[in-house]
Structure formats: C-alpha cells, structure tokens
Image 1 (cartoon, rainbow, N blue to C red):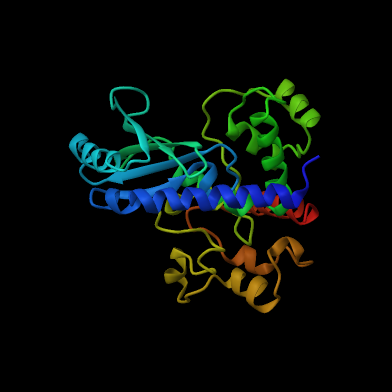
Image 2 (image 1 turned 120 degrees about the vertical axis):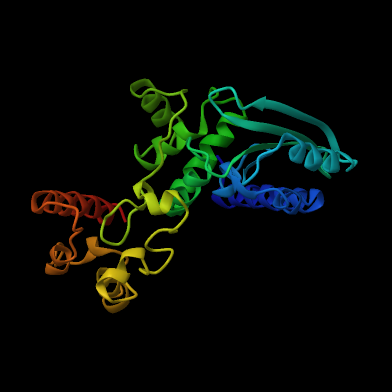
Length: 296
C-alpha cells in the first residue's frame, strides 16, 4: 500500500521536474511574445502522475508562424527529441496544437502539449478549470486522486479520462479502486465534458458560473477577499456578507453561521431578479453551504 508521504513526495518530485523543464526551455517567456500562456491540466492543480505538461496560449493575433518560432527555438535544446504541429482550426477544437518531447535527467520522456488559440476563444478552456479545482481540492481528495492515478499508471486500473476521476472523487466521494469501478458503472465516462467543480463564494454563489469569472475579470470571491465588482453600486469596497462572515465572525463561509440565511442576504438582492427568484437563490445557496459545512 502506498504511504501518503511517499505519494506526496513523488508528486512533489514531478512538479519540480516539470518546473525545471519549463525553465530550461524558457517556454513561458517564448510564448509571451505572442500571447498569454497558461499552465493547465494536472500539473496546474498539483495532481500530476504522468510526465506531461499542458499549456494553453491565448493570442491577440493568432499566427501559425509564431508557434513555429517558439517550437523551432525549443527544438535547438539537445534534450528535445521531437516536435509536432497540427492545424486544428477547422476541427471542433478550433485551435493550433503544438507538442514537444523532452528527455529529463532520469531518461524519462516528458510530453509537452500546447494549444494556441484566439484571445476570444469561446469553447471550454482549461484555464477555467484550474481555479475551481484548486478551490475544491482538499488534502484527502488530492490523495485519493494521486492514489487512483498511480493505480492507472501501474496497469491496475483501465485507462480513463482524468476529468471523470476528478468528478468521481469530488462529487461522488470515490476513494478506492472498487468505489471507482462502481462509479464508472453508473455514470457516463470517456466523453469530452465541460464539467468543473462548483467554486462557491462565502455566501454560496457559484463563482465558476459567473461571466466575470469566466472572462478573467474576477478571480472569485475568496481569492479577491470580497472585493467584488458590484460593490461599487452600494458605496463600499468589500461585500458586506464577506465582511460579516469572514472578517468579523472569522468563519470560512456562511454555512458555519447559525443565522444563515440572515437579513443581510435578503437585503443584497440582484436588481435584475424578481422576489421569487431571489428567494429561490437564497434556498439554493443555503443548501449548498449546509452540505459543504457538513463535509468539512
């Protein structure tokens, strides 16, 4: 049986090796000349087991020649063993695919997958998956994911999409290989999906579904410490609910407060909502936070 410390040590070694590869290739800086590079995938959420690095690059002026410039420069590194390009602009992916293979000090072949796309890319983005996953992961769920991924790598479990595993662990409570097999039996798996965990604010709103979060204008309520965009309309700089529950009561979220939902919840009503919609939203947010508080 894997000891937790051994799992975490291997994960940390993989993370350090990946960072060394990125520095050696100077990959982020090379791409920054042409767009906004973002680290995505398992490495970005610190659950990497396979020797893979995944990146997305969002470009104000997407050009194939820019990608070839980056790849050709990297190919001069003696540790790079191969490079690949696929023009997928006319496919459902609607982006350009680039790949490098890199041999590390231990002789392990690392695959670096990169997708370059227009800045206004409208399809699901890996970058929108990273922050909700980071917020949802706990030491227990991270350990479960690493354990099951290592079982897959060892051939003890059949191949599966990592996003299916994340969903099973975070939403389905899966922790063991047997639980994973049962979850697979009762859920559709192996298909592309835009699933991501809910990223709840302290009052139970799902930040990941907000257009301001999706457009990178806001990093989420907790990440910006309650300084949300709409406070400008109520003459304050911090959400009153955030100030109350986090700053004054020192609680993680309203689910731990015996007054939830309080008068403050009802006062802070989205003007575009009807009274009925507002009350429905309050019930839904309360339910989410009660579940979250119960699992803490």
